[in-house]
Image 1: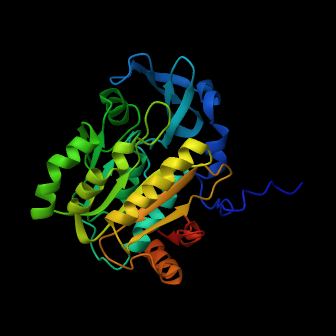
Image 2 (image 1 turned 180 degrees about the vertical axis):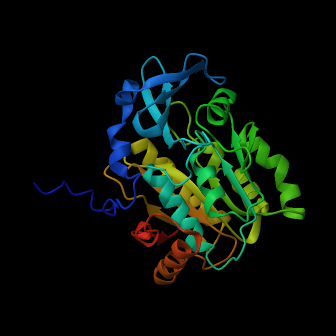
Image 3 (image 1 turned 90 degrees about the vertical axis):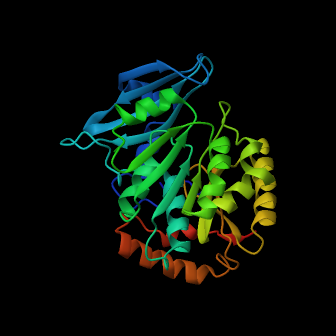
Amino acid sequence: PAPAQPAPAQPAPVEDDVADVRLADSWASAKSLAGRPVFSQPSNVDPSTRIEVHEHASGWRSLVFVASERVSVQSKVRLDGGSGLAQPYAMPTEYLKSMVALALSALADVPRLERVLVLGMGAGSLPSYLGRCCPEARLVDAVELDATVAEAAQGPLGLDPGRVAVHVDDAAAWLRGRAAAAAAREPYDLVCVDIADGSNRIPETFYSAAFLADVRASLAPHGVVCHNFHSGKADHDRRLEEACAAYGAAFPGGACRVPSPARRPWNTIVAASPRRGAFSSLEELRAAARRAREQRGLPFDASARLEGLREI
């Protein structure tokens, strides 16, 4: 039978590498509990929630949040059998591929991406991925609120300490403290934001005018910020629209949104740059995505993940 079609506003699923979206679907919600637990500790932020790591076949492990009313899979990694470190290119989370595609397309003409920041680390899939495809980056800074999550990432989830510097802190406060220094001496080429609360909502703090001012102050003139938002439910959609308006105001002429291709249309990536017109030509961005894929060895079709992009 023909596969079910995605919602009209969403691009079709793109399944083009070994860690594709079908694998992520197979571990949805409580199904992940079939794996063997190798780590289980109370959350440092909410002690009623347990942070667990479950081991699956073929070296895969999942980061699972277990609360009284909700079990959710935060992310998945695949460990290298020799080093025990996470394999950076084994990333079945589709929206993270969309973030990488959009960021590297907008930065394709920047020869060296030396400063990268990820706010909201989770299992470390995104900073690991960026550390691999941007080897010129001295270190990828990653900020994580929950010390237990950071412990899981740096332990049984195999985060490479030689590529990722982990900071346990509130991301907004940490960025505020670093914004002046970054602007004066070492601005970031890329900032990625992937933060949700315990109810899977994007906190308003992380698209407030003050936060976006700190993001902008931390970026190089050519820099890019990519921010994951949830969509598909009324409250998620409201927050997304508010965030788009805020990004448009903070980065006039340099902001866009693109839905992530997936079987479930629950993610939209918002991106912005101090550079006006950074996202004005989809054809130029697609060409840049093809260059970025070749130059950086991306194992997925970056150009396809720009489908549906529109300026804010």
